[in-house]
Amino acid sequence: MHNSTRVVAAITAVVSTLALALSGCAATTASDAATSPPATSAPLLDAELRTQLESALDEGFAASGMPGVIVGVWVPGEDEWVSARGVAEVGTDDPIGRDNQQKIGSITKTIVGTVMLQVIGEGEYDVGLDDTLDRWYPDFPEASNITVRMLLNHSSGIGEAGRAQVDRICAAPYAVPTPDQLIAVSAETPRADFAPGEGFEYANGNYFLLGGILEQVTGSDLATLIHDRITEPFGMDRSRFAPDGVVTAPLTHGYSEFCPELGETVDTVEWSNGESWAGGAMVSTLDDLHAWGEAIGAGAGVTPELQAARYADRAIISEETGSAYGLGAGVVYDAATDCVLIVSHAGAEPGYGTNFAFYPMTGAVLAMLGNGDGGTGDAASEVTKALAPVLGPVLYPTPTEACAAPWG
View 1 (cartoon, rainbow, N blue to C red):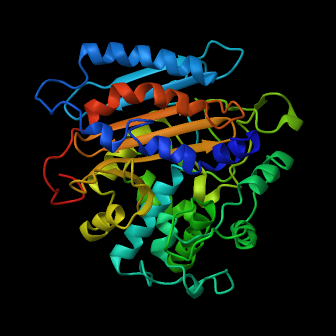
View 2: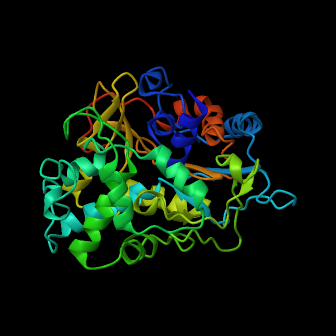
């Protein structure tokens, strides 16, 4: 992969990054799960596993080149495993703490998608999964053929403006474009080579449009919707929808190599999140991502019918690995039973890499936050790749029969 392509992937958390997150925190896939040992009553987070996790984290952190990383794994009824490496700010000895706030990029999509499903399910607002985009954006290309459902699972065919987005960030890292400006850029970006609903193309433009629709339908701004519907009710006190990019202490500095014209490595902690808006403008912490994983597992205020649709109405990324994108979340599913094994998303902003996953078969949650990108888009994924062979077989036992719900 050419370096410019890697830069695009890291900034926008495109499919190559996302697929790593969906495949069992990295390379472990649904097919790998078939060889996993059956679940037992013994603790999953036992001393042996913790030792293996610490070694894997050492390996992944060294390979990543990031200044710092923190990872947490939580299994219901068991003690947590939380471990950090490196520093929150280069030139200091300050470790990344679990309450350190940083930018989490495209994990934002799981939140915006959930708000849309909540709004649809309440019936108070005039919007549905099969409503077409021309109701709100009649001049957008293919608007009469693109539905809300397609925006949620990236099957609309809207193209990703990644390279242009990178160039704009490097030219004006503190700028905060308006949502209409971002939507206009998406409208001008060449479409994917499939008709609406007939494929998968990960694109921030889908979520820019969803954010715009939510604001029009509800009459509230997106920041208020996320606060009132997500961060406050689910106890995510250190999370905020932050297009301005402002993070508050304790915080983690980000270190980016995406813009060589600005210096070899640039501290991005004060950069805006404006280019990401509804596709990636959240800031959060390790513990808040844990809370969000638990909320996702419990439905996060979505009706049972729409919760089922969230995982059933999926655009396939890879049939071989069972990885797909549902309505506002990535999923890995078991082909034999159609049970969902993993609900996950990666996130990337200049200088930062994140990952979170909920494992329905065990109720476990994983969260990872790092503060470097390496200029390639692969930095944070090195950590998840190292942890995957240890965690994958433990956190999702293979289902033996069809699940009555999206998971058993």
